[in-house]
Length: 201
Ligand code: SAH
Image (cartoon, rainbow, N blue to C red; front, side, top):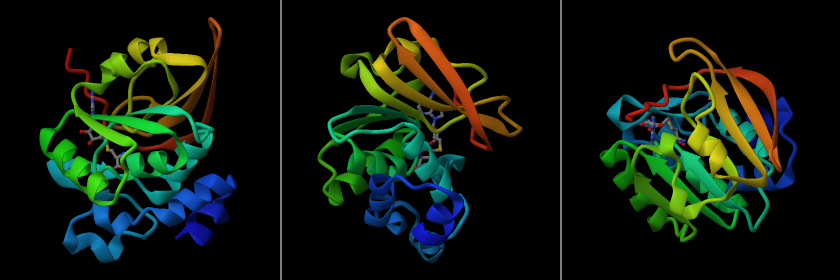
């Protein structure tokens, strides 16, 4: 999976490649889909949601330039797979999921696999998670029409936000936003297709 789907498409950060080799992806899908877990596409999980294609998980992790002591916020826990990859790379991860069933199941698998630095919260992640802020990196795994202001507010100076921006039923642009002081720069780097970020408020 890593050599062909991920390195083969240009992801080169050795820490990201090691993380992608370390996380047992089959543990984050149903038993019936376990034999498809390392294939080059997204897969269905509970509540009508999806676990992203491995390459996209790696691409987002690389774009977020995560250091070993970083505090990371993930919005959209889904299966918990992305949170495990982020936990391999960072000091701590808070991952927020709005579906209780997914949040509980992700928390259980992450705990069984020993990811003591990953915490799953059941809440509306478009609000971020203010008690853990500021975050060195925020990774959003659901598509928003524009950059959610709460997530920008919770980004540390020097922090990176990686988020698919665009209309929910079409393809979106994977976007990297960097904050330096009061300035932000934003860069689109790849078309992607994600489930919508639900804004409950
Ligand atoms: N990173 C996941 C894939 C997530 S799919 C994985 O590795 O499996 C996107 C997830 O975002 C879905 O589970 C969906 O329920 C969740 N989501 C959508 N809007 C949300 C919101 N406002 N707050 C928290 N989670 C949200």
